[in-house]
Every structure is written in structure tokens, then in C-alpha cells.
Amino acid sequence: MDADILRIPAGPGLLHVERYGFGGPPVVLLHGFPTSSFLWRAVGPELAIAGRTAFAVDLLGYGESDRPFDADYGIAAQAEYLDRALTALRVARATVVGVDLGAGVALRLAATRPDRVERLALVNPIAFDAVPAGDVAALQRSTARFALRASRGILGAAALLTPVLEASVARGEHMPARLVARYLAPFVGPEGIGHLLALSRAIRAEDLEDIDYTQIAAPALVVRGEADEYTDPAVAQRLAAAIPGSRLLRLPGTGRLVPEEDPDQLVDAILEFTPAADAV
Image (cartoon, rainbow, N blue to C red; front, side, top):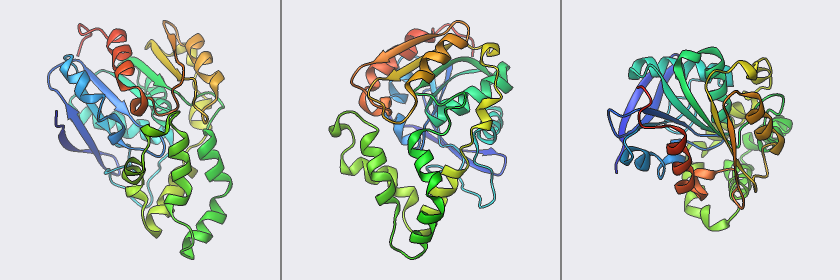
């Protein structure tokens, strides 16, 4: 199934949105760092076949969305941009699914705009004070050194991100070279790596530390890939305990990028957690 490609205004730029299906209960799909809506290519069509309308969003600065030079790419800002995009899409209320960074954006939206979020599905989430995840933290610690090397033409995005992407799946066949190249494409060249470092710097703990998770009204399905090497394994359990009406699903042998490794099981879990009768 091919997606409808949309360009949606959201504050300082346009968001690239891929829509699968039409007219069913909306499900918003948010990628993590350093991926894009491409992550959801196996999930979106299956949700549409099951009667949902899936919106796979490139967060501002990622994938094919705009990347304004002076924009705020932090979690709180991304939640605001998403809120505006949902207004433009005429989506009043939705289930929001996010992977790592995307889960953080989903949590921020649920905390600040509870009327927007029917349910949450949080896949290997970042939350509380466990922000950023390990790969982003490593980039942040070395930003100055990486930027200098990039400016001299001796460091590219491939050197930084290839190991991250390969370690984001438990089984190597789920991240072959062609997929690595696809995820690297937005960050190729001197400007690309500078933008990558800017995105990493924007992921700040304070955007999630001030949330009272016990007051989030939307029940959450918290999914933990047990082979995820980057996000704190305790966060998933803490979230499932903190957010009322939530539950924890553990996926043994699966890494951080669950939509790449185990899309069918993720789709089944989302469908079970989001009845087709949910209001649009």
C-alpha cells in the first residue's frame, strides 16, 4: 500500500507526513533518533488494512521535513509542532505511538494536551531523567570534537551513525547496508553532519523531567525490546507503573527499532490496545 504524502505546516516549517488509510480512528506514528517516518513503512499499511488511519510523521528537522536553521528541535518544541500539525490535519484526538525520542514527544503531548491523546504506545521510551538515550548522550559529549573533525572533512555521518543503527537491532539482517544508507541520507555532507549534531544537542532532560506521569490521562502500552542497548531498561517498567491504566509488553530478542525487527507483533499489540471503536 502506497502512502499519501502530505506537507503540513507546523510552526517554523513544514512536516513531511505519510498517511495510510482514510476515515478510520487515527494513529500517529513518531520515529526516534536518528531515523524518520521510513521506520513505519511496514506498520502503517497494516494499520490501514485493519481500519485505522495511520500518520507517519517526520519530526521537524528529520527525514524529509523542513530543517530551519534557528528552530528549536527539543522534545517540548516537537510536541508543540505536532499539536499544530494535528490541527492542520483535522485530527482532534489520536492514539500516538513513538519510539525512543518519538515516545518522549508523545509523552510531552499527552502531558500538555491531554485532549489530543486517546492512548499511548511507547516503544523503548525515554522519560523521567533518563534523557538522552546512550547514543545521543555520546554524541552530545563529543559534539565540539565531532564538529571540528567534520569541518575538516575527516568525519561524516556514516562514521557516527552506522554503528548506532547496526546496534539498534538485535539481528543484523534487519539493518543491512541498504537500510543504513537510507537512514543516513538526510545527514550526508558537511551540512548534514552539522545538523545531526544540532539535533542531538536539542534532546534535553528538562523537557521530560517536569512531567507528572501519574497525571497522564491516556493509558499507555509500554513496549520494551529486551535487546535494546541504548535506552534505560528501568524506564519502561517505571512508566507502566506510573501512568494509570497502562501495561508493559516485553519482546525478548528484539532491539530498539522494533518496527524494523518485529513489525507484525507491534501491529498486533497496537491493534489490541486501540479498539476500532475508539472515537476519531
